Image 1 (cartoon, rainbow, N blue to C red):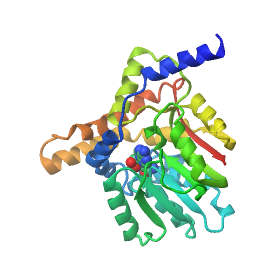
Image 2 (image 1 turned 45 degrees about the vertical axis):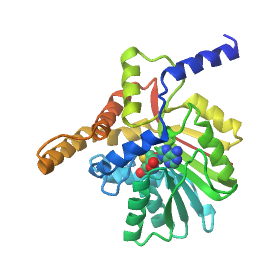
Image 3 (image 1 turned 90 degrees about the horizontal axis):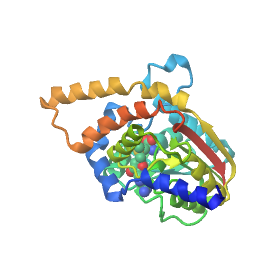
Image 4 (image 1 turned 120 degrees about the horizontal axis):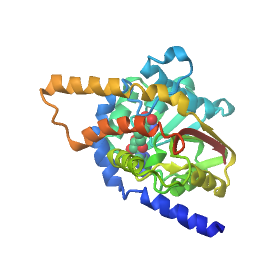
Length: 305
Ligand SMILES: C[S@@+](CC[C@H](N)C(=O)[O-])C[C@H]1O[C@@H](n2cnc3c(N)ncnc32)[C@H](O)[C@@H]1O
């Protein structure tokens, strides 16, 4: 097939598996279900974990922290004397706080579009006396208010999935604009491997996952890589880490049961808002989708401006 025809049919496939999600949907989901992440992680790590050593397999919180530490290590902050970092989609700031614990001379600006994350995230930083080093503010990573060349490094931990498009074009071009020359980035997330028609049930499960977590679509790796290249990023490195992430995903049923028992004990009922049920369903769907390794993978992507 000629190139433009392949591109057209890829776009058709991608359109079928993209939902019309607006910022209001994302904000509503996090405002209602956001605090339920406490059942997943004491420190409010809103991401999956990374297994460094097999002996850590039973310690979820340790694996969650190891994910943050892996991202921080890949940013190679020792190369900068007083690094300025941008956390694009920072949640409650768990990764940002870990960064300044490891590199006290660094300063992190965390951005999110969710008001409660700004208030509670900054409160958590204050509790640890890290509020001078980590500032969480409201900003849209697809249209940032920062000047060009503002940051030494930028990272997105399980947040790029909220950006529009299979290549997350606006996020990538904004990231390029605000990074300094030679600045580094690290993005970790679940990805679709390539544009491919899914079996009916798989597609249904995938769309349900996106709806539950208020995501328009996961990025498609082939398109994402192309977008990074078009934006002239150098030394692009793409590593699949699905097997390192799977042990933390295996904790989902245990955490789900614990959460449901706690809710039942506290409120004597399981009448939860739909968004809170969605937040229970989507991690369970992740376990199912993760088995389809031809279609889905968990990746760490890094590079330099
Ligand atoms: C799954 S949470 C991950 C939070 C954090 N990175 C962590 O690992 O704990 C996704 C985050 O992306 C943020 N987000 C979604 N769309 C965004 C946008 N357009 N601009 C900035 N942040 C956004 C959400 O508000 C949320 O904080």
